[in-house]
Each structure stands twice: as C-alpha cells, then as structure tokens.
Length: 247
Image (cartoon, rainbow, N blue to C red; front, side, top):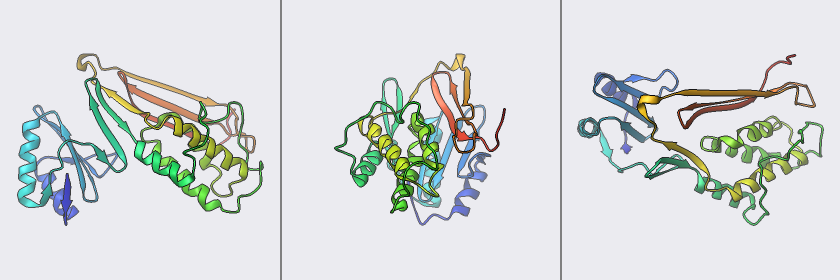
C-alpha cells in the first residue's frame, strides 16, 4: 500500500485511536492484539504493509484509513524496499535477487567464476595484510550494500561482519575477500528465507549460539554468533565481534 502526502503524526494518532500500540523494538511497527484480531501495521516513509489474522478487519481498516488519508492499495505483497516476497503452497519466501543482481552488475562480478562458500576456510583476515586500497570508497560502498543483504541471507552474516571490521582502512586482501563473497552470491542469487506455516499447537523456540575463541589475529577478540528458530522458521540471527578479550 502506498501513501500520498500522509502526515506521520496524523497516521499515528489515527492508529492509536483504533487500539494500535507501537512496537518496543521498532517505532514504525504498530500492533493491534485482542481476542479476535491480531494485526501488524508497518510504515516506511510512504509505504505500508498490513498483515494479520482477520481479513475482514484489514479490509475495514483500509476503508477507514482511506476516508482520512489518500491511500493506494497495491494488493498482495510482492516487493518492499528491495525485498521480494513469493508465496507458494508451503509458505512465504523472502529474497533479494534483483538487489543482488544490481550489486553484481555494479561491481562487474556477473561473469566471474562462482565459489561454494562465502569465505575461504581457515583464513583469518588481518588489518596488516595486503596493500592499502587506492579507492577505499568502493569497498565501503559494497560492504554497506552487503549489510542490507543480510536481511534475507543469514548465511553471509558472519562474512559481512568480518568485512565491516576493516572499512576504516581496507586493503587488497580485504577486497579480495569481498569479491569472493560476491562470487558466492552470483551462484546463489535466488537463495532466501523460507517461512513455512507452522503447527500453531506445537510452537517451539530453539536457539543456537557459538563463538570462535580468540579468532582475530590483531587483538585476539572472539566473534560470537547466534540464531533463533520458531518451530521450522529462522526469525533472528547475529554475528559480531566481542567488545573485550575473554578467556
């Protein structure tokens, strides 16, 4: 759904009047939850996603908001902020194939030989390895774009985190590692997140965490990672360098 000249404050007041509350985690997400209805209302600038458990209520909400603001209903979700949504009989698949293709074209990697893994096994990147890049802005731009890609590609989160640690002074070694990751993406462009419809009577949380102890050759700090699944669906993940040296 798209909005035309919508005042954020007016929309917020209207939603609050209807019983929506702001999410603690994200102020742009509004939630309505009662015994009959559970609706999520996500706003980004002039774009909106509405989903929930009651189709009739959502249709009524659309009509009500349309009487207050200038709305354009774009139908079922297919594309939002570079993220593609595909539905099938098993659930919902989120991917960023077009986003990856644009990035590969920009970096001239489309014809490069593919690799099976995002990073070279056993190789630890160091700030003192390689020669300083003459054009570090390109490295920073590509790594910044890769950060957004981790929204639907959790398997590259660790690699992207490693590359981000050298944006202040990237070298040829870091750029080669970045290009390797791009070559991996070139062969896995249609990978994404698959959200299956779970058995609502048997919802179970699973969490996994690990760290590669003292892995950084420069300061001996570890990198920690975790992932959280709700039944079969991956809902949260992270990989980051620990702020202190631990034993």
